[in-house]
Image (tube, rainbow, N blue to C red; front, side, top):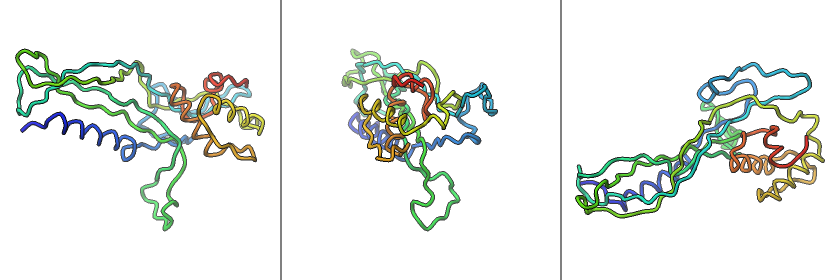
Length: 231
């Protein structure tokens, strides 16, 4: 017996939960050893050298367009219904956040948090198969739903070198500027009194970069220009 649409909705909800938790992928920004499965085809592991400029590895995001669809979904229980077709739809785009994740599977620390490291964590996109009715006159078992579809316009999820702010320029005054710009943009952070480049600020920065489809993980020139911060 073919599952009904209510069961199908339940499966979608489970996929969404797992995409936000169990399927998250760690993408720590290690300047020397990026993982081999997310390198740009044109990536050169030799850090660029350009008199006085600084470079670091960033994650290049995929760019999506969004379509709001009205879908005619098969809602019967036949195993092989007629006048339908299968369609895979991206219902949630790939995203990134700053968080903790176990990176060394062989870590045997007695402390539950001893094997965790902070870094950029990737949440994969969610792709769901829909059974679409192609002829409503010949196939009466259907319902109509509204569904947002994400369409990849340019590929992402790989690492590239980008020009970034040099360490000596990341002063307490500059950290204040970044904190204030992020707060004004609605990406709140609780910067500490010592004006440190802390976890709250890094988390807000990655959320901002993720939201605006900017390179992820560093104080790169594109991000600073988007924030309106001179550098």
